[in-house]
Length: 129
Image (cartoon, rainbow, N blue to C red; front, side, top):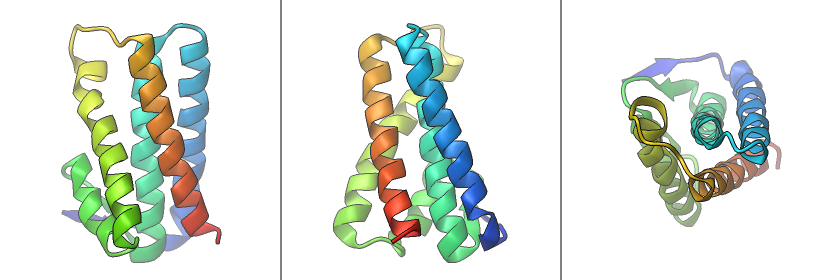
């Protein structure tokens, strides 16, 4: 189920996405790979919330993948497919990074940051053509 959000608040989600990404990068540099992945995941979530808030006045609430159904109508198919793949890669790391006893590795952190950067870059391009 999607939750209504004032479209003027989209930039707030962008700010949160940027802050989380900055924290992810700093954490990775300091070998705090769990924190890096967690923050990269949340950067991706906030990036997509910015997009759907701006263009549809909604954000996903139940399941983090729900937002993809909202994004689908906003982006052209090739862009949607690329963001979907990157976002799903991030979301697949969420449970392990936040709730499981396993540790994230430097490779995990680098991949998560790369995906979050790509998502944020594409969302920024769409929000600020």
